[in-house]
Length: 180
Ligand SMILES: CC(C)(COP(=O)(O)OP(=O)(O)OC[C@H]1O[C@@H](n2cnc3c(N)ncnc32)[C@H](O)[C@@H]1OP(=O)(O)O)[C@@H](O)C(=O)NCCC(=O)NCCS
Image 1: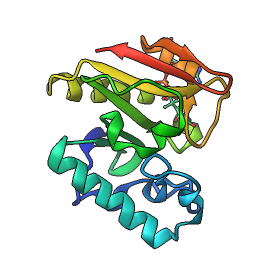
Image 2 (image 1 turned 180 degrees about the horizontal axis):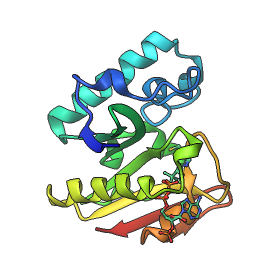
Image 3 (image 1 turned 30 degrees about the vertical axis):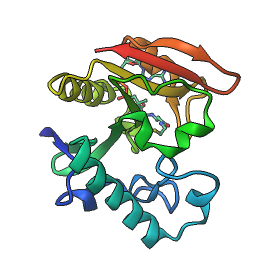
Image 4 (image 1 turned 120 degrees about the vertical axis):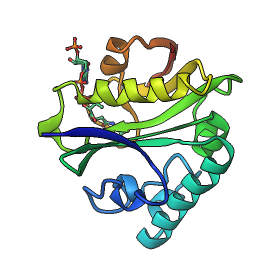
């Protein structure tokens, strides 16, 4: 059994998880990259194009902004991160995370439930922080929810375990920060 983490590039973009029907699949999810209800309305092919284009553009300015976790050459984990200003959806959350040297973790996800709870989420998050530290980014921010499962926000409990602190609490979500 071999595990590896790869940066998302145009070459491996097709490996992004396609576990559920559009629009909830990572490859076709443009929730953070859009505003309003566009992510529900956009056609699957167009969504995939938007997603690919986001990674291409962000790569040329910020650099690597996502990782894939492979188990025996099959993708089992996905994560996406970049400075807050590159995620238009954040404007809809009252979250002051445009701190100059912070990066917003938009998604960290293991689609297959049977693979959760085995340390793989932590491994993927550790890969994100290692990657960012090497590029002189020292604060990682995310939005999380108390409920176990949400299509947009990860679980508060997991991030607390990983050393994040609740910076701001709203009725439906918390903004969390970690100095890395
Ligand atoms: C959140 C997620 C990435 C965590 O990955 P994971 O592999 O299941 O978690 P790990 O096994 O690495 O857990 C690491 C630690 O966090 C804890 N943890 C994991 N999930 C937790 C949760 N939901 N609540 C509280 N603690 C949690 C584990 O118990 C473990 O603690 P330990 O170090 O004391 O043993 C994964 O469960 C997932 O993808 N869940 C769905 C998330 C979601 O819906 N996201 C929205 C889309 S972005």
